[in-house]
Length: 381
Image 1 (cartoon, rainbow, N blue to C red):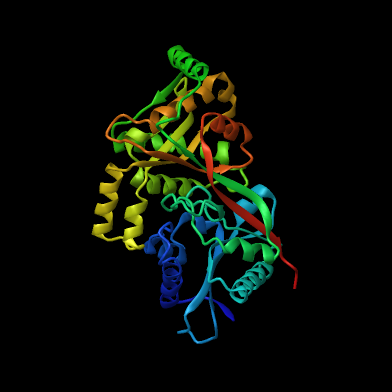
Image 2 (image 1 turned 180 degrees about the horizontal axis):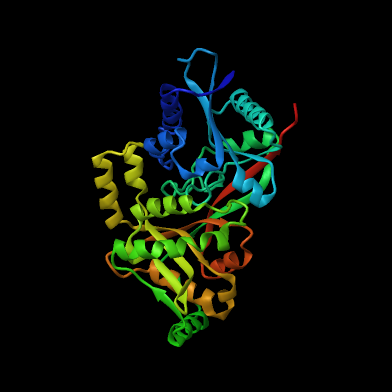
């Protein structure tokens, strides 16, 4: 087995095409756009202003035309390591055929890469935090990926990780909500209505992308105070926040986004996105006019909503903020406008958010998927 760092655009094409072949008969898998891979490879994302990355490809021998058997992107994220006081090498886009020789060769190459940079552990799958979801899928293989917001992988991956000595670091949950049966307890709804009548805490709603764009920077300013210390995240730079705003606005529908203010200051948010997984799958990673038209059509007629962002500053949670945001969640998933949602999926909920998870379970939400972030020590030398 040979695992080598790729250097050319031709090799990058093989890196991009490998998972399309690996998941060709897996309808739950959703490809990332080829254009995004090229941007990452060329460092055209603000993430790379503070992170170092290498792309590795596994083959059966040194013949550059030998078919790929695995791949991985290795990352040193300086801001993450500073925030969490770690010396971690992150990894992402780790895919391989079901062969222990291939998996072990990749794991060994990953450890060598980390050791060469003076890093002491492997941690992943993790990449840019809010932009692309992290973790290895270990539960919920029957369900389709939530667009490209959370990854999908084959069920055999976890066995190879654990055989090689990787241990659980933390889990990220995805919860399903049935809009037809989702009901708030009467006392919670009464408290939410009382908060609305008092007037200090208000819910901003939007009718146009222009309105949403103006509010987006105020919402983005909450990311670092509310989420940067979570184990999957790190403090994002201003350029990264701008990139997230740009990326999410492409999918956002103004009537599905909510912003909560207190005396005019933004203190919370609820971000929903119509599920266009089918259009992305049919696009096969190619960003063509046909793909864009399919995305636009599916966005207007989606039967599922993906909720990738719900939070309120802690000091406002116990003065009615939690009741208000759960009430707005109910209104969003039961949307009475042009949508008729059959299902809502909340993604990237860290297992450590005990209060939120307990509340959501009481309201009828079920954990449908678990993505696990693993860690392993790197043996020196």
